[in-house]
Image (cartoon, rainbow, N blue to C red; front, side, top):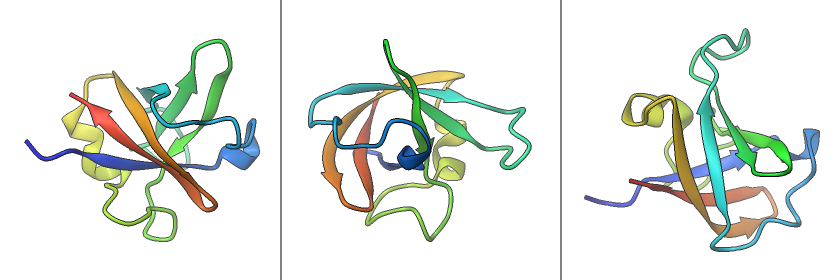
Length: 97
């Protein structure tokens, strides 16, 4: 199976992204009651809490990443991802399956 890439976005509303480094594990949690996006997937870091969301817009998805809508049905209520790259406009991760 090919890797599934996703972008963490909206980090500026939480703790920023400078502290995120390759190989860090992040937790993805579906947020079906989110009023702004019924396919929202929040991204958490143990001990820190919410650090952002999986990008779900063509304006926030970077490169070959999949949007939250494209991975929503591929995960259970929670999943784990691994940080690959911390770029100026988002953080690229891979879904651990």
